[in-house]
Image (cartoon, rainbow, N blue to C red; front, top):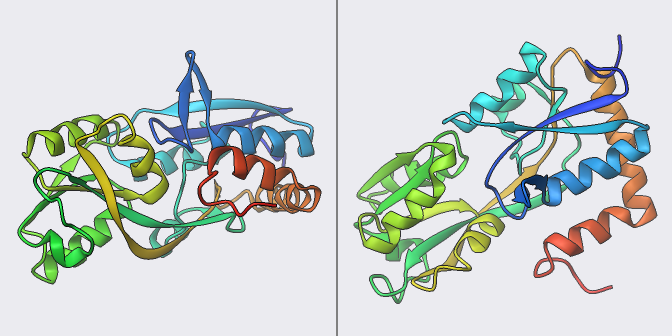
Length: 240
């Protein structure tokens, strides 16, 4: 079978905003994910066609693979057993923890999850931060969880600034980037979830998954992957 639905083109779905993975710059798609996939497409002699996912629940992004509307999904996507039952994943290419954003004025001394006691956490629907929030609620730390549509992250941060919720949990590099222009907010702690990120493919397209894995290996061997990583994650990339 052909590797891609459209000959010579790789259609890749991503959810926005999700900086530094997925950003819109000057009306165009950008970020680590898009730059990485352009490099992958260069290795595979394919043209990249980014596709913006607009659903409320992040996990709905995988429906496009089964429906044939996209060839791959890359969106700072954590590999989980539940997702792996629906799609194929590439070899993991990055690993991060969950980060917790709080209001500096209302929670000035938060340094551990114990300091979140009695707070309500904001979570995007379908995000892997939900598992963290549910565990903290079951342990009697969080008082509640408020769910926001995936594209509603700005509303969650607005509510955190206004004190309507007490925390927002999201993958650490993303939440850290999202609060940069919000001086009332800070990300004082990480929850060590050690989430491995991968690129998703339809279960009947193992050939494309294998081809992308070979491209990722080639990009690592050439140093191109490290250069892309250093541009988008300078704080987490060791100096050469």
